[in-house]
Image 1 (cartoon, rainbow, N blue to C red):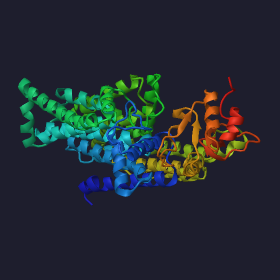
Image 2 (image 1 turned 90 degrees about the vertical axis):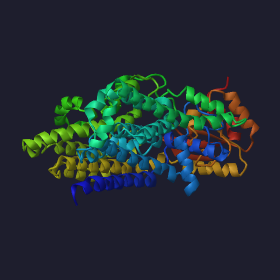
Image 3 (image 1 turned 120 degrees about the horizontal axis):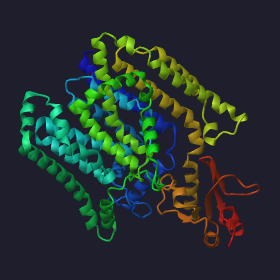
Length: 579
């Protein structure tokens, strides 16, 4: 197999296999998780069963900053394959694979002379363990990342070729990005587009013909033409946004038009993707927490000695057009997200592509220099031992900690972990330390495979715990059976604490009544007015002598269904003392 086949066929096949394994384990061995996944499914289900697809809604109310494109993808899977939680949960890994391929494509467009750089960048992105874990949960952010990559790919094509196809792609990416996460798409795309004179002249062009096209932007009149084309790209994005908002405004009597306009006005509110359900970050956050999360997402490369040795290429990176492109893409967005109160730590996933591309460039540059001095084997020879030791420590902790329950009080989420998988991690550690190939691109590939195995083994170890504590299915089946018997059911707690977790698993046609735990009179009145009904509540511990209708383990607590007659007589079970 020649080099081109390895880079353009072999690596994408490897990525597809690894993403496929992650998808199979994630979907097959754990339930949809409360919070992120179940809230997204509840929103998609609410829109589906109300035939209201223009603006996202939940229980008939439109959230302030949730955009529709990812939910439309879920609806598309249901239309094609039937209503199930399986197909929506396969979307994140598929989108993750798409992002990996687009990272490689963007690298090849920026540095066409370095055949393996795209393969290395895609592999390093996929090797970030935090991104792999995150990619099994939040498809909306991955879809947003894919839109950013498409927009910037179009920008590079527009510069290289001087033709309109690139500018159309740029506008297309902006429009789709808005439909995923609002106007925050501009934070990632606009600085790179506006600062084209900083990076583009140092980038060069791929071919002589393209260079001839590119030289037309030299001089003030040429740059004026460039920015006019950028304005047309932005106009394409605006037209796509209008194609969504105008039908919503014209929807008579639904209120969706005003909701769509409100979404447009509030488009700069970050953290507005589907799974932000609890207002995380709304009260402000410390910027260093965001940077700490960024460091977590950089594992294992942040502890890989070969990557640290490559930092010596920072000065050439600053002089390179592609390096400037990536830095202009990365730095403004990191600063904005780190300082913005509404940003979430997991927003660092949006920075993975430029970070992977910068790391791949530096590593490639360093290897070229080392190879020229014939020192590659000596200088890059022992770095994997560090990763091997770290993986071995994780494996040993996975074995020992769940067994130490007799010596200390362990959190519920540790006690249920299957420690036997730690032995497999120790084996992976041995391969990491002693099985590294000589070429750095294949060393990075081996590290990525090892990180994927670490994530997969972690999922397998956590699977029994998640099936026991996070599986809302049995409780939803009980709720569905009760409703089918015309039994009134309410939930005592706040709306975020419930999180609409049972809406989709129970296929609710009407939203579940939510009773305020601080309103003891209201709870008693509801119980008294619904004889033969049930009240569900999440409890830290079970009451001695209590006789609930049903009990289900739930995230280290218990989801308990009580008969309304018991609550009417003993309201203190679910609420505070009567006033």
